[in-house]
Amino acid sequence: MLRLVTHVDSRCNISTMIAIALLRGLIRREVRTEQQINQIIQRCKRQLDYFVKNIPDAGQNKEAYYTVSSSDELSRLLTAESMDDLQLDRSEDRGDVWKCLGAGIFCLRYAMARLERVSGQEREDLRKTLFADTINNLVLRGGAAQANAAFAGALLGAYLGYDLVPEKWRKGLRDYTESEEDKEADASKEME
Image 1 (spheres, rainbow, N blue to C red):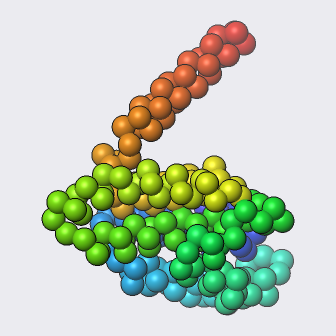
Image 2 (tube, rainbow, N blue to C red):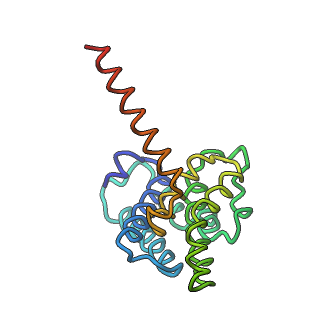
């Protein structure tokens, strides 16, 4: 029910449900194939429909929820076959939560498909570069690049593993986090 507190928009509700379900499944190693991704998406759509039909106070506009779970636009973005299909650089769509969701899921599907086609040493070599190559390609597509890369990075990191996130990115994140913690500590000392 967290999504009800933080995301009152029906587009955000379905996005949050799918994102959390996918991340949970990836971390627990229960999601390893595109078919399992599709099953999670369908389960989330059914859950949203159930919620709207059975919860007395599902919000002001129940119809908005129905149109979300059956939306052609959502389906198109979640089944994109190329990054071009996502149209990430359209300025009028910047910040669209469904585009971010679609970008992350596309990157996850792409990684799974690439790894399925190779084996042995070739697979291991690909695994080492797949995270960075996929994220870099996504960022170059424009749009809400930071949000898209953050979500796609979370999915790819959960799927491929922390060790396959490039070391300079992991170190950079650690340095950034420590720097921000230092700034917060300094700011709190100044307030005393």
